Image (cartoon, rainbow, N blue to C red; front, side):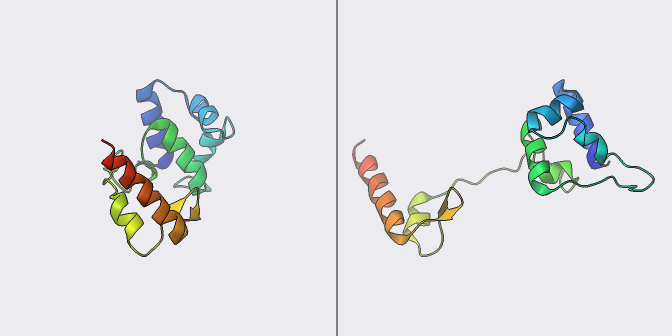
Length: 118
């Protein structure tokens, strides 16, 4: 099944037209139709990852599911142990920027204070 076919199938199951999925994704209204297989592109055109992510978000599935890399619509997410992430050396990020060690220590102290208050 091609990318276009998967998007069309999921959209139909959710009661969306492809134009509506495009609009909700913030991409051109007919963009998804350009991903349909053709003589020039037998597998269809694969859009940029960020564009595909917007469509996946609207449809409530993962990009890997849309691309046919997995049959799992949404990956199961593992919980994050903030105590470990903020205590360990290494990178923690917020808003696309790495947190300094001072910020990590301050966040950890704040979380520990909140935990003691319960």
